[in-house]
Image (cartoon, protein in one colour):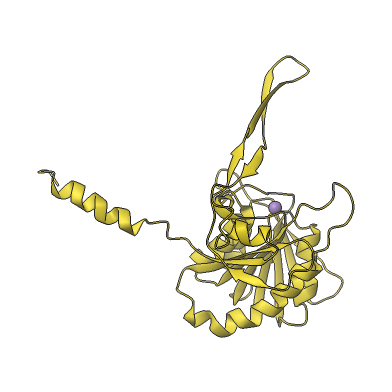
Length: 261
Ligand code: MN
């Protein structure tokens, strides 16, 4: 098994190290390609208006090759599959992200987008997030999330033919030591007071986006948000086909009634 690891928290993130350690003896080849700094919430952006610089990352365990990229998570996977890697991996794993990637937040997520980039290029992928921001200072443990990935990876590779094409698994592991998982759908996340306006020391306005998340359907245990809230590991199959097939039929009825279509 050949695995490409990436993330959006940057090459030095503890969550990436936890994955690398957990999979070291499971994968016959383990490659790491990650951004040189945190690139959280950069979504699926790619770098096309400037050159991208790459440096090799050296690990002293001798088991793994790595590259540090001054680009986005999607850049990392694109570069890996098209140029850096000596072989096509069997799996792309993005994470372990520090913080949840739930519901509509997957659209902002660099972690999920990195996995999606693998999928777009025909490589099965999973995105893994620790649904916990941890203490303001101090260590966060990724150990149980990493152990779960270690158990899931052989299962995914064994059954991947049965998974519909163009589908990745978005996994969120709550804090604590959850043992049970739920198969879920993406919930809906919104942010209250998302934009704060302040004044800088030179008297000019600036804006800071943060806000308090709330979910109109987070009480539903079938959503990823509901599952994590109830202490379960959430696994959501996510596809890159955003087409609304029901709406296609509705649109066709509009156009049938127009003489010029
Ligand atoms: Mn992140």
